[in-house]
Image (cartoon, rainbow, N blue to C red; front, side, top):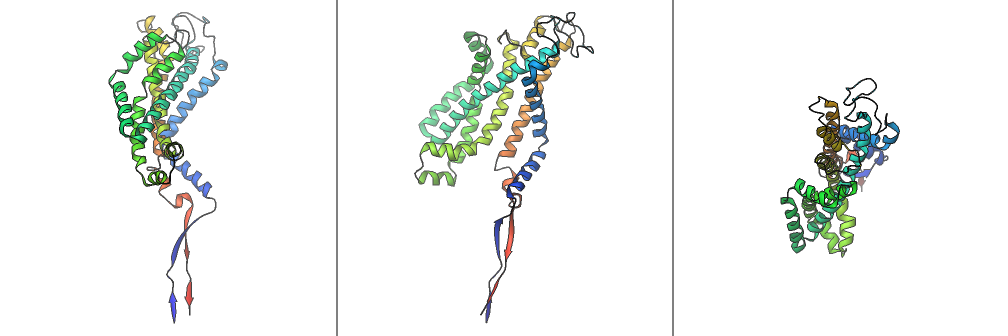
Length: 319
């Protein structure tokens, strides 16, 4: 008499799992051309900002030709109203504009992320108070409030960073709060709380790792918003007069009749740089959200992509 044990399928981790994960991540990135395009554009401008003092072809205060001279072989983008090379001004403006954009985005992401996490995790009265404060900031038009605060605080780079960062956190707070409220009700978070973990441990070790991809994507988009807001303030004459920025270049061009003089090269290049960085940040932010979000990333849904292969074990026992 013999009996047979049915075949059992066992999942075991195959060798080289980490290599397959890296390969899967590369394939996921390659399926997002927006991520590549946005990353390349942003990396290009960051490199220009880092190398600015060494690659500027002419001095920023040096008159190298007539006023509003047209583009030529020596001056690819012509000269401004003071006879200064526009390419040199663009390179110098890259450093100032990106500094304001990244620093202000860091401030707004930190404030908005903190408000969103606290409101979403604790809920109740805490959530109600923080969301009412957020609503008050949401209904106030950003630009007029930034103009008032910038005029009161003064026109310096760090004041502009604080003005933009402290007024652009509301959207981040609401986005993160919604995500945190969803994560808080998941089974593993309930188990963490039932096992006696404190709020600090639950937030730092279990909640933040789940929110981090969304926070990163929101932060990249905040860079675009900050650069655009800084350009708007500079165009209105509220930027730092001692710093060269893309918005300041446009403001000077309009003030000094570049448009009526037909000197498009004093207006279009800085405006194009602002548009490129803004678009690159939005493309990269959306791609990061798609790639790193475990709920949309196919890498998390396929055992074979993780290098987890089925192994069939068959045996027969006879008596």
